[in-house]
Amino acid sequence: MIDPIQIIERYYPTDTLGYRILLTHSQQVAELALEVVRQHPELACDERFVYEGAMLHDIGIYLTDAPTIGCYGTEPYLRHGYLGGELLRELGLERHAQVAERHTGTGLDSETIRARGLDLPTDRLYMPQSIEERVICYADKFYSKTQLEHQKPLEKVRTSLAKYGAESLARFDQMHEQFQVSSTLV
Image (cartoon, rainbow, N blue to C red):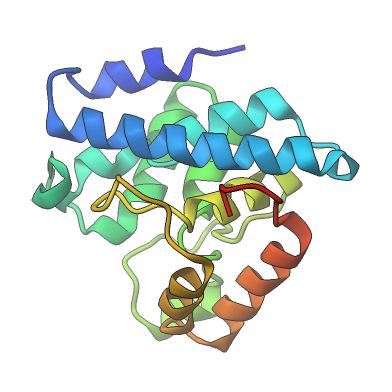
């Protein structure tokens, strides 16, 4: 068992905007992901891992050039999942690294990476594989790091994902069919 907040604090000073945004966003994603797990016992998810993965999925944002969310690195924001995966892998957290790498959008396939000329290594998968990765990826779509005060409505999530193509939206719709919860969370 790991302490995700302790890991976050290795990379983020606690008195910074980046820390506050990352922690709030990660807690929101974790809360929804855990609600999915609790309302869908048939998924047989590793609840502790879902919490840890949700808390750490965006750990790489500080390395990116995203000043509006308190991140003053030099990398393009699109690489935050890959970069976070590398950080977590250095800590021996392979499963957590895969969550970080595979949560962008509804996942990225190698064809999309090549076709769009995305600056990501093509030697790994960027599509959520495990049920836990899929739950975290799904929950993440409902929260923005620039508008922390509320959850995105379902239609706004769908509209946003539709911009990336029919396949991306179809993957989300499949996740929603499988993971939707009956509460004020979604």
